[in-house]
Length: 355
Ligand code: GUN
Image (cartoon, rainbow, N blue to C red; front, side, top):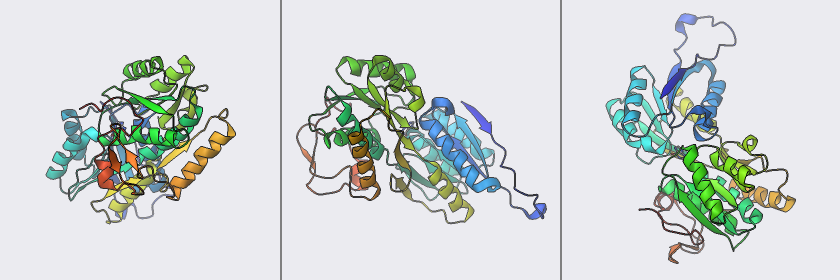
């Protein structure tokens, strides 16, 4: 891994009483990929920069990139605490157990973990409703597919990723009931060659519009070469595939980072589970391609507005899994417990969830 320090933003004017000026709050960010991935880690780093811009010299931030999930993460996080950081943001699911251990040993440090579920008095979790972006991509995909076969390049079979596969399919089915989704698992968050191979395999199986829950632009670029369609994920990836790119599921982590740092600065920090979506300005669907027909643009704008106003819920019954069993009764809107336990494909997703 590699790390980079950034000096605090310069104050607008020289401080009159420098001696009494509080020290900046030191916060560190841990990324699983390179900040240059143009996807997930890049989006978190944009969020870090946004918070710095908002909070100025009240904060001083550092990041470490390319940190493997597992023992390496624990070492990196301990090191960041030893360097005097008072807030640690660990931005990938697999950092969870390392965060639990290091938080236990450092009660005076605030720990923030995306996208896990374990909390403690000084450890809390946050995540974007990624699945709302996946649903919006599905609306576009359902209208644009010619083969009625969508493809999904998946990372790890955890509820978060299964929710996204299902949401993509449900969004597509909301406009095109004939749609089916095929899935290829790559067991990695960031592995461009594997992501490319998975995309190719989906094209070979007849899929013509792909979404991915991986961090790079590889799937989109594979679609560009194959003359098919795909989406940006995590950030605006439109520049990487002008012919294939239909739109991007983009995340604005900065709104949370500003809030979280303000909680520490204002001494209002408490253990919480934050899950923000379109409504809170965290999840968005951006840069719909110019060539997308007007009725498709309207369908996705309407769906986005429906999510923002909560007139649409992505997971609302009746929902049936791929074996035909009811998983959510008619008119019931899924709660967090339901969403946290998703271990199935909805009807229309082909194959079996890996065990
Ligand atoms: N990329 C790397 N880590 C993660 C994660 O925890 N969630 C998602 N959605 N993408 C990731």
